[in-house]
Image (cartoon, rainbow over all chains, first blue to last red; front, side, top):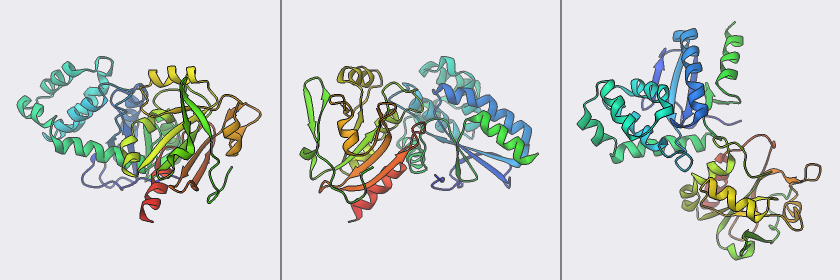
Length: 172
Length: 153
């Protein structure tokens, strides 16, 4: 059974209840259509379970398959430096069908980022390193495709709808 | 399935229509053999696509990866081109499945290789193996753990 390595820490992007009993980690790629399909389901899970759930996103860009996967991840991490990771994360998935360099700038404007800083951060070594670290964490944790989910540190064998179903059953 | 410690059977298989790969030419390097059922499985969860993103990690451990299936060189060529793979896919095509059989990972009923991983050390011995359920992409954590173990010796 594959487990999450390293565990969720202060470095991670976390949404939801800090002391939630259920921790969900997604390894995702912004250009992956299956991750795009999972996005509204994750939102529904968050709406349904509220503070019972802590949701964490780690980058797993499949760069050889998806041309814009890395630049999208860079855009989200650059937004994070201005405290707007989740705004960018959500906007990227909502607009996945038109992913591309123009979209990143457009979204940066929409969510009100300092554009000069955003452009500079998006090409920084630190951010690139962070994405590499996430990717390596994914490999070490046994990620075998995107999206991959971990529930309380253990790899969940299924997609977002299976995850939703499992949560409904286990909290019923 | 061949066990840990066994000498990895040598083979010579085509990587492209005019290039053959001999296992014994890779003595002195760690080798990863990834047997898989067939080319053209769905993209985001594709095992070969995952390994393709990981070549720099394999390099770090002085390891060369080969994918092996019973598909022909031409099929491999098309698949590899489509997915932009940067490592060789070997055709265990004629006699069909000969190498897969030698490693004990051939599914006689379906006529495809099973989904199996081997890490072969620099002396040509099997250092680690793993047989995955055919429908499940085994990821790469086991491979990296095995390579890390070898690098400590």
